Length: 393
Image 1 (spheres, rainbow, N blue to C red):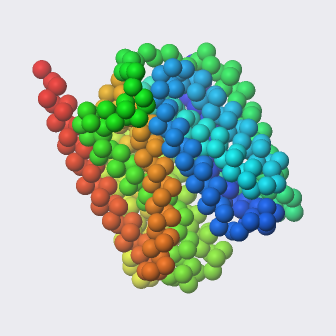
Image 2 (image 1 turned 180 degrees about the horizontal axis):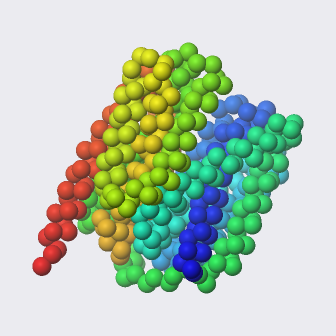
Image 3 (image 1 turned 30 degrees about the horizontal axis):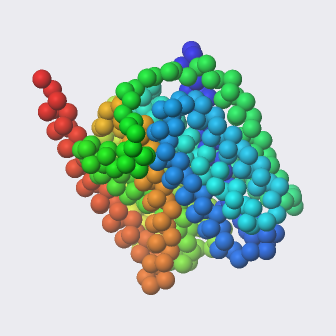
């Protein structure tokens, strides 16, 4: 009962992690006019948040080793709540940039801490469900913002409401502190700096470089398709903007519903099998989008989302299996950092590519990273399987 109650609290924390993620995009059309800045300045805020997330992900292992998952999660949610509350009162772009720093730092630590905790303490299905709750939060944020904007109210009201939801979660997390298991792992932290320890892990742990590249490739696919999918429909298929937005939303429906369903599939398939199934699903979805008929666009977008659904949570849950519990927290942070580098850089990079190629290159671009991810996944699985066999008596 105690373990299930804590799992519910962790799910609530992941909803809170998703709440701010899609909030900026839904609010920005109203925000940039109010702030009197160019429309492309949203990218500056997004980059600052992502940079903070990468940094906190890399340092999460050391912080959690010292303070524990419960305290790091609670403090991180406090940071995001303060940042969002500051957003709701800010009327200056520079202030928003400053507030984006704690917003990113808080998000990265929550992500790494909760992913590793669930990987160590719960079965694979709970990891898939955990990430479906992120999708719930990512969907609720824009709905709350849209409800205020539809009433003619300010975007500040939306941020204010989300901030108070986060504050409510802080109270719940503080009350839940006695529920968290105090799992003591071997201390592998020396006197060197964090960057030295991470480099040591890269050099000494077989397959780690491949794992980091897999996370980079997957998040390149997820983020690039999420950002440019609607533009592909508008500029290549001739859809109206509102029609493209509705059709593109099926991608996120596929991810959220797919992760709920994947939780049940873990009873019949291993993490590695689900990753392969997901990669096959993405391939089918991209193949449908390659066909020059509008009738296949709807199932294509949905299929790409369903394919993406099990990959990220299954990769995360496999971390202690691939690399051992001793190093899992640090490696989890490194994986999250690699994922956020892909999220930050590659959609921007593809946007530059479209200047030369147009949006028809989207399917080819994603297909290249899918093939690379599939190759690396198979290579990593073979390597870790070999290492595991060699350790048996």
